[in-house]
Length: 242
Image (cartoon, rainbow, N blue to C red; front, top):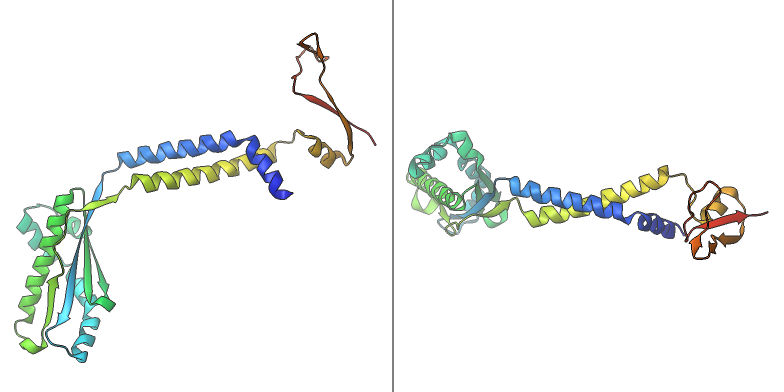
């Protein structure tokens, strides 16, 4: 019975839900179109021992986090800026780069976000290449059998749109708008103290309705009420008795 009541409340003011949902949808689309597109390019670096050795493999697992920190240094940022002639502040360039260490795969995953998809790809490649070169320099004094090799798994491709994703934002806004509209409908119904149905009459006065008298039509004209206003042809005057 409670579910039926909820449905009646929603069906009476369904237009409120529709309006709020459509406003939320239009707002989200306008918001997405006003944003500067951000493209993301990704490059993966594999970290592997020069020989199959369990102890060396354990060392790599412990060094992955250190390598991820080395990938985000001002030194590499300056080298990439000079190499690509970006003329960007070091901090701003570093903010474009994110690195994650994947221990189970002995891999470093680096992403670069930029408003230009091709520039995002170029930064990702130059950044990874500079890190590999610096790592090779650090490995030069180490015996060849004890070295840890780092290389690019594949060259990064042009950046893909990362933000804003208009479709996902629009769907989320539409659902959220519908939920807000439903809450608003229940709030309006809670604040509305008028009696609309016979069931509500029985609920409030505690008496059963014996009959409902429809408004009479006289000669094709709707009968006027005592105060001079026209009564609705679909209206009903409900009377209750003990």
